[in-house]
Amino acid sequence: LISAGQQGMVLNILVDLHPADLARIVSHLSRDLAKDVLQWLPVETAGEVLAELDDDYRAELADALPSERLTAMIDELDTDDAADVLADLPLDMAERIIPELEDAEDVKELLSYEEESAGGLMATEYVVVPASFTVAHATEEVRAHADAIANIFVLFVADDLDRLVGQVSMKRLLLSPAHAKIAEIMNEDIISVPTNMDQEDVARLMERYDLVVLPVVDPDGCLVGRITIDDVVDVIRDEAEEDIQRMSGVAGGEEATDSILRISRGRLPWLLLGLAGASLAAFVILAFEESLAAASILAGFIPIVMATAGNAGIQSSAIAVQGLASGDVWASDIKRRLGKELTVALINGVASALVLGAGILLVGSLFPSGMHDPVQLAYTAAIALLIVIVIATTIGASIPLLLHKFGIDPALATGPFITTS
Image (tube, rainbow, N blue to C red; front, side, top):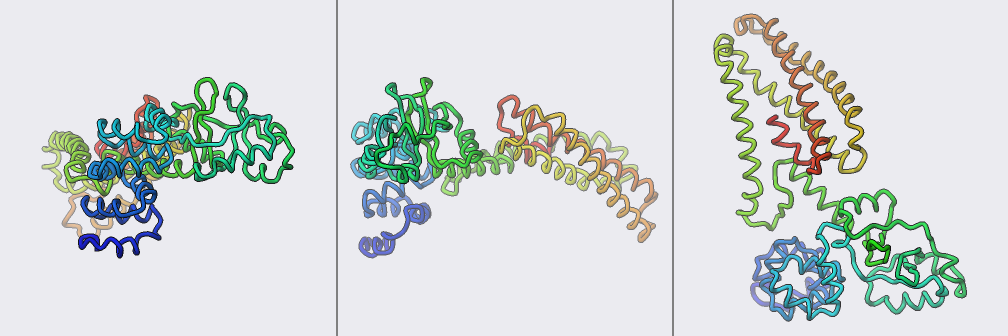
């Protein structure tokens, strides 16, 4: 229908869908068809769809839209979403659009913050009142901002210098007498974050304290924005996806809409790193060429030992990365953590070694002509397996902790890196 230019029929199908569902449909269309859909949709809906798209595809699509239409779409968004869209556009295009926006100054300020910081995550739409206001006066203030702010979860309270001193939930505001002072009902025990806090720490904070909105303050304690739970859910998802990709040997940030060249560029370095590591392993094996020639059956157990060691290393590193990401594991836990992992490695190593040794003895008894000395072979393979499981588990548990201590993403210490080492 889009290809045939059936605008009325297309809108009849799409107009009642949620912007997030529309974005999923648009992301599966070619750029030209997606551009047509965004041209046909009501400008407010089209803006919300644009904000829901993946970064690279959004930038490609925005570049294809007429400047006037794109400006109108961005103008309908909250300041934080508008800043996200503009950050993905070519610099010259963004500089042309910003002055035309209704909230140009607020958007320009948001763009000055690091993209993955509290300042880059926050929105500048919020309701703030002085403590001297009555409940009735504050309620009128909420009504006055209702059209401009999608969700008003709390009412912020500031002093004469614009410093944040408290907040009032909507429930408390509605249940309080109209003549009561805001100072009497506000909660002064509030949690706020500075503009430079990393977005992952912001998400962890909101998750820990079950917050739906978090105020952002400047170095003087003045309120400059708020972060809402919907933004944090996106952060948690994005950070988890990035960690999973890095743990799989893919550069974090790969999206389904990325080009073939971009995907290849993100994966190839890790494949080459794994190739280099495997080459080192090959040199080690070649150093024992004479031993393997004398007992060629040993070569058959090399992949068993290497694969089991790799699995053990990935298990311990994945748990360490998960603990660091959630904040459950601290740098000071390294001794206790390594002690626990070493004990687990010994238990699992002994169990795996016994299973392998018993398997070799069983095969040796069933096919006595196939093995010269099954007992000696069972001892050799079992001890080798025990040793590598202990080594691999120790490496897997310690490397993420060490990387974290030096400010490097511990998710890099998994996948090909651990398997190779």
